[in-house]
Amino acid sequence: MHEMSVAMEICRIAEDQVGLDALCHVREIGVVVGRTSGVEPESLRFCLEALLANEPFRGARPTLELTSGDDLRVHYLEIDDDRPPH
Image 1 (tube, rainbow, N blue to C red):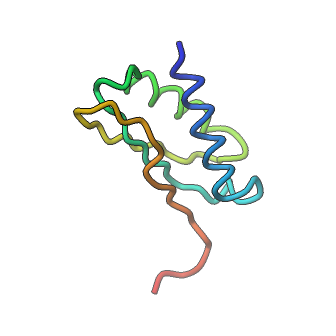
Image 2 (cartoon, helix red, strand yellow):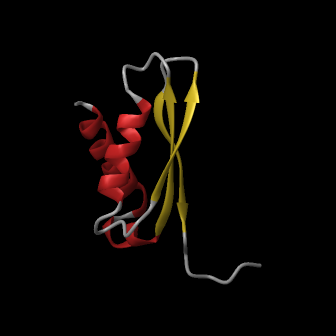
C-alpha cells in the first residue's frame, strides 16, 4: 500500500511549510489527486486520517480534490493561528 508512503510525505511537506512546533495548529490539508495518478483516493484519505489523528497534528482533516489528470500535490494548509476573526 504505497498510499501510506504518500500520506507520510504529505505530512513531511506540511512540517516543512509550517515547522514542527506549528503542526498542532494545522486544521486542514488540501490535496489534489488525479484519477490517473496511481493513487487510490480513499486509501490515501484513510492513511492521512490515521496520521493526522495523532501528535503532532491533533486531528487535522484531509480534504481531497479529485481531478481527471495525473496530479498529486498538496494544494493548501489551513492553519489556526489562535487569532480572533476580523
